[in-house]
Amino acid sequence: FPAGPFGAAVRTAAQLAANREGISAIRLTLGGFDTHANQAGPHAALLRQLGEGLAALRGALKEIGRWPDTIVATYSEFGRRAQENQSGGTDHGTASVHFVIGGQVRGGLAGRAPALDQLDAGGNLVFTTDFRAYYGGLLEAAYGTPAGQEVGVAQPLRLLRA
Image (cartoon, rainbow, N blue to C red):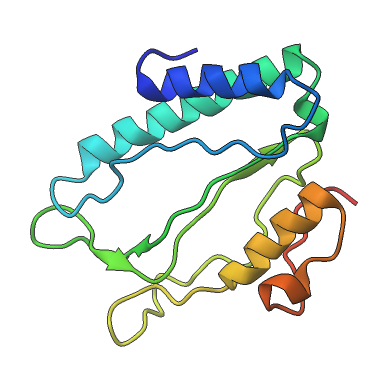
């Protein structure tokens, strides 16, 4: 597992996942992405931590036989603007990317990529997938029941292989 607090949290999550009785969800946090200034270096380091942590978690889950029934999903309470600000960072925006991995997760892009040349009047990306469809898709994938009505969306995002 990677060194540092996030690596330690990933190790703990893998240990908890080894318990086949009653562990339905585990939440990990990697903060620091709110980069309004000098974003390039810190953002790259954070993404490296995330990637190394997820790779270690995947390896541990495969080793204990839990990878096929695990879904790992990222979330954020805000997106970032497409255009860099005067301080070499980005400000809060309306859209964001999320990563979903797991043994049964369908690879590739789910939804449509936002158009970088079609920003809204405030300079924000126009989101192409409603966050409720994302969360509805996660609930449906994790618990096997249609979740659209519970999160207020008609069509949850399909995240698992058919």
